Amino acid sequence: MSHNLNGRLFAETPLSIRVGSNKKLYYVHPKALSSSSSSALHARVTGPWMNCGDGEIDWTDFDEQTIDCVLNFLYTGDYQAGRITQRPGEQSQQRATEESEEIEKDKEIHASRQQLKEYELAYRSIHEPLSPIESCLDYHLPFEDSPVKAVTLCQETLYEDIPNELLLHAKVYLFAHRYLLDDLADLSLRYLQQALINLPKKQPDFPQQLADAVCLIYTETATSELQENPGRKLLSQFVALKYTGLYNDRLEKLLAEGGPFTIDVSRKLARRLMSSPLEERIQELSNSNESLRAELADKDRETKALTRELHNRAVWNNNLPVRAVFGQDRSR
Image (tube, rainbow, N blue to C red):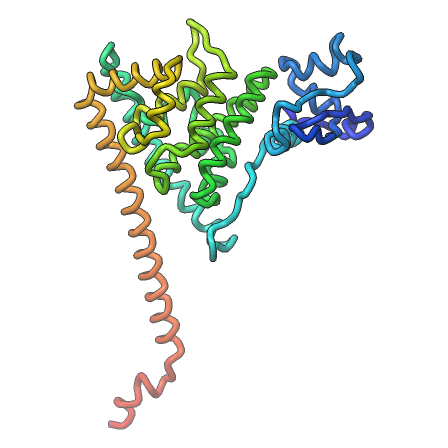
């Protein structure tokens, strides 16, 4: 899509776009906006609306950070959420080593997840359990068949920034949903999914940013009888799966308002209650995967330490003088 833009892009006269409550002026090439022929943006810059109004595009209902992510995607095919930083002391060489080690581990974890999916499919009925949040979306996770930066970014992001990250991804998803940018919608949901997976590690309750993301997606996106809105599904599934740990006054107030979100969460909680034995088994297998992953990491570190020790012993033996080895025999 957008990453196939060629050099002719820069011969175009940019369009003016007003962004955010401050109406900041952005300049964007028409070819970048029209890169997806199925999107509403394509119609805006190529159809009968091209010369409507004063020529400016009005995106003032989206903040600058959201539009920065959108434009990065339109030009490069990906985007990075703000406030990304590496953990203290992390070096690029170490990162490269860790990433290569993760490849082999992820293969085994992916096989285990496939086993989990087969287990779920075999027992699907009216009482079927909720799928783990990793399997909630119909397409693969970022680190599976078609890797993107989602996993790397979420690993680098400081945990206290994750609530802000998930709200930003929800805003990007809303933009993509409104303007029919399917690729961007899928990517933003992958980022949102990974942020939700990491969220409970340092965030035991229901953060305000998650409440804002729920309100945003449930208020501004629609669903149909034939197909469940994937953004709504992801958020309600996460709340239902983590309900006990997330519950606080903020979540209680949100549920008390009623509406589609309350209905979706209630239905999923009912499924949990009716299928708790099977769900516990799935959770047990998921926990086993995490334990196996940690054990593999420990074994890798132990193997590397032993390899270094053997290497150091070999170097030390090779550097000993001959008389130090045979001196006793010569003295006889």
